[in-house]
Length: 134
Image (cartoon, rainbow, N blue to C red; front, side, top):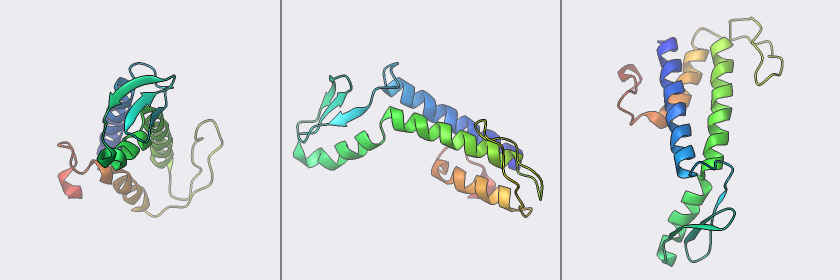
């Protein structure tokens, strides 16, 4: 099951990355921002959408917080963590993470599975989410 869960998570991260890149219009370095009136802007000043309502300010703040650049950074961090978890061995030496030497880890037999389950939780509504985790 651990291998299936790793494959599931990698596929979800690929989907997150694709969605973020599509939202950035091919420019993943753009940072989204919102004016007090709810107008969305993409750096360098491209107008993405004018909500025109103060009532939608909280939604605008949330959308801006999850801008494509942040999602891409989160995908990269989760992939590194997933790769690290995949190399954990009971009492063994972990492989390098992002070019840095791995740390000695001592893990029980269920630690890897528990960490993978935690990473999978945000995808519980995905149709490919493993039934045994529900």
